[in-house]
Image (cartoon, rainbow, N blue to C red; front, side, top):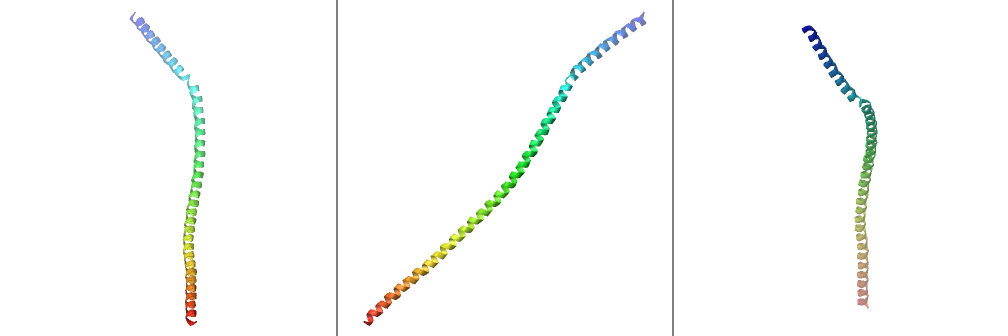
Length: 127
């Protein structure tokens, strides 16, 4: 009878083991039910990532264009500043020229007046 009872115990152990395996398989199946949903979510995330990558590339391209425009604007600013400095130099040169020219004219007039007065004095002395 011990052998039959041992076989019965073994059968009960096997039954419990099979029930445990079935429970674990049911848990695994329940866990795997969300895999198709996750696969769809992953595909959606891939599409979002592709769009974000394209947007980043586009933004990078626009930034490159802005950098080029900034460099052109900086060069134009430097050129304008150089032109303004040149104009200021020319204004200073014109001031010097005007002062010299008008000084010469004023000196010439003063000499002419002085000469006329001297000539008047000499003429008055002769008479």
